[in-house]
Amino acid sequence: MEGILVNYEYCTGCHSCEVACRNARGLAAGEFGIKLAEVGPYRYETPIGADAPYEWVYNPTLTKACDLCAERTAAGKMPACVQACQAWCLYHGEVEDLVRKMDGKTRWALYTPAGK
Image 1 (spheres, rainbow, N blue to C red):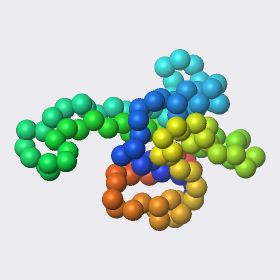
Image 2 (image 1 turned 180 degrees about the vertical axis):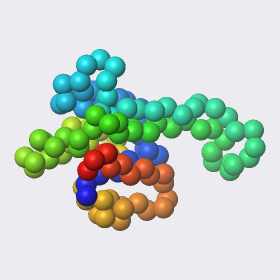
Image 3 (image 1 turned 180 degrees about the horizontal axis):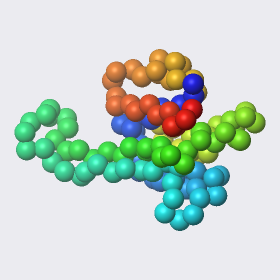
């Protein structure tokens, strides 16, 4: 089974993944195969560590419109979102291989499209 792994500790919120997906899939404005969710910014009142009093992260999330760019990957190319990622925080591959990339030092999310 294939999936997309996101290291959202390093996502900059540039929306390149959304734009690339929309163009590759021919989606209308307001439709997404991958959608960037923004969390924050907000300050923690309870101490969580001297190095992180604020929370402000972006998390690219696959939607039901995502098919992992089946035509592109069948031709040996990366999914459009992965290729366009300027922060190099998106990875595509077999789920077992992607799980091995998760280092436990940063925050990760692993997505597999519905029906795959």
